[in-house]
Length: 418
Image (cartoon, rainbow, N blue to C red; front, side):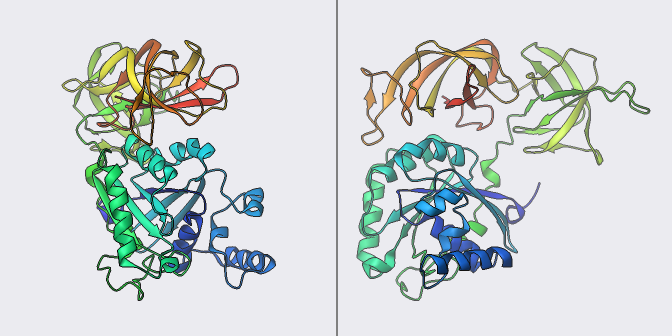
């Protein structure tokens, strides 16, 4: 398997409005020399037109025209950059309360989350909301960037105050690795280069922290799960009898001769070969896309899951989950949806709302069970056919799902199985 420093790192940024998320990403791209010359020229021109003395770093990520004109980030803006040590995908997610649903989208596949806090304002409601969502989504690494330190005279005392504020509420959250960084995204302090203004801070700058973050242990290598996306029957010379099952390994490791079970049917077989367009493989692990052939001619179709016989997930038509409601319209009791779970797409409904969560107190609201946009609740979900599930904390792929409205085809909820 690949070494950490060659692995792709996905990270998301979150915080309140105007905490400097887009500026921070712009600074990372600018100082790491990841900006194309034509991009730089365009941003310099726009910055001058708007009356900025230098380059407006936020323009490197605020991709939609009307966003730039309003000076806010509305959708999730993705950016890709590479340093000699690692490749990165950044999801710049909105800070507005009504856009929390976008943060769920941007953070759902992240290895790490950067939560920005304005050093002047400290921890506020949106900080708590985004930290809670990062915890709910089981993002393994949390980097709390205390930004705009230049506006509090690079005060170590203020930095420590905010750490105490954050730790006071985050002690109730489930996050394995939390780190704190004092930065000024606008001036570049502790982003790519160490700060000359905060010599009291002995840690590494942000980019070095991201480049050296250990993420191999975040991948589930134990529970072998292979959701089947399609059945391959090429019907051409040399492949007349070929029957392969194509998909992406969700977790674990598969090898030829492994004893496997196809779920939910329960048929068993052995892996005959693991194929790619470049030939056969000795093993396949997440997140590789491969085709698996079996020794026996058994019925396998899209939505099935190939797993190790000795380690099977639960096949269930009813389960409990935490969901974030993403749609403008409130959830309708027992309404019919399509659930998208790996490659399986049965019909489903929210059988019961057990309680909603107050993200400020982490208390349970068991009285008001009307589920509105951006609200988070624990629910019971019922499906028309079995889905193969693991708990989200054990497997982020087989433990997650989305609900889609059958009439509008809009995604209405994102869920984590508990």
